[in-house]
Length: 371
Image: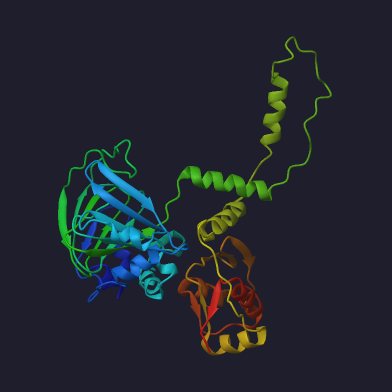
């Protein structure tokens, strides 16, 4: 199935020859694929408070960008051409979208971001642009024409609410229909224009900047590192200028700060917590009428458990990270937890995990099938 998704390539060959290196057009990547939802269902999602949505109108150097949630009247005022509606994290609200994402498990879950869907009327686009991350663009209903370029000039327009390239020079062009897919590595310029009313599903991946990682790590150290002592100057000497910060003070502060150190374990702990932390706009809904612990055990024993699509469970050895929290597993728990992290579902729940899983269930992180 993965080889069909990758146009006959094995995951190993795709990662070796294309991932992060060069574009790949895959015809009929998902046979008989026409999409996961209707335009009307997508508009309904865009009106929800808990769903991130955007509306983009325009072309050339004239663009309008609006954030949801939207009202029905917003859609009634739209023209027949040149607009695009985007809904982010479709996998959080649609089981079929979560199942589609699971087909891309040849990429580590730690790198996966979400599934975005784009609905565009004829001429609709988000303009020529580039992304700083890898992306698969899977065509649902309708047709979209894609132009791409490996140009090095990535200058963007000023005074435009979108990151539109100032000079886009297409090198290749394809028309994608239902089931076709285009893979693009980071910084490949691309321009997609709807030929007719169409929907495109974007599988995006996380690529935090060095600054974001460093800032996050420093915040992690702030919570985990304790340094003893206090600034002191028993050998203080009279200064000619009271307003001057003396060299002795600078040397002492430098020495105090130099005591901040970290280990490979600190890096691993930060990475697990950072990459499993949901986005700030993600919230979990506990079950409205949670079952008892005994009922949970009985149903979990029959049907197993499933991670909430919003949950992120990752691991390093026997150290596990879920939604920004870390814990250690015992020898008889590790294999089951690894299976849950890999496949997001678990048929047989070890007795030692049932109490922990029940806490996750009450928090909305984990689900059991209806009785």
